[in-house]
Image 1 (cartoon, rainbow, N blue to C red):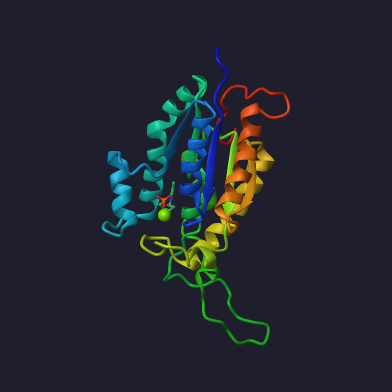
Image 2 (cartoon, rainbow, N blue to C red; image 1 turned 180 degrees about the vertical axis):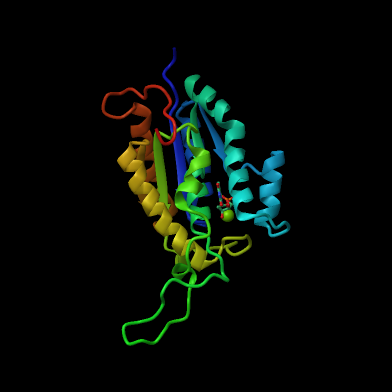
Length: 244
Ligand code: TMP
Ligand code: MG
């Protein structure tokens, strides 16, 4: 059997530079004769993806549980082909994955809900914000539909402050692209990073997405080369599953 490919996920807030870096990375891999393929979630081209696209553009309203499950189903549609590619020696670069699924859904709040206590020590109260409202969907519920999907060998998290991302071109066009929501998404990603590390679901590496494009590109390349070597023992082993 040929050596299996590495499964590399790029994650981050909206406008953190993921898609730009994923495109550069795949070009570099191909120039280095590494069989590789770029995929992206949501994949808006499938029938499920078209529903997701319409929801993100605010053309359709969907129940929050329903859209969460559609995002997951959109990954399950291609889960077996990801495993097949990896086993055939193709390295798969994936622009967003199940971690976005958890972070963007578990960060949702009901804007009409009663805020968690916002009173200050002197008895006055502050205006409720996104982060003082209770979550709409439990974290464990958001994690469940993606259990048993192929697990990445490496996740590169492009970290950017929401107010910096909000100044980047094209920001604000889609649902979720507002700073309050993105602040909470960023907190959720930190929680996910801790779990990935605790449960050994591949490596999670945080890279500074606020750096110059070229610097981010080089940092990504170093990590990916390491992942392709297969870590300490030089073996990627069989494809693992989220979160077992
Ligand atoms: P995109 O900008 O990378 O195409 O992603 C579209 C939006 O969908 C982005 O705000 C993140 C969000 N998202 C989810 O809410 N759940 C998911 O499972 C995925 C993959 C993305
Ligand atoms: Mg986006």
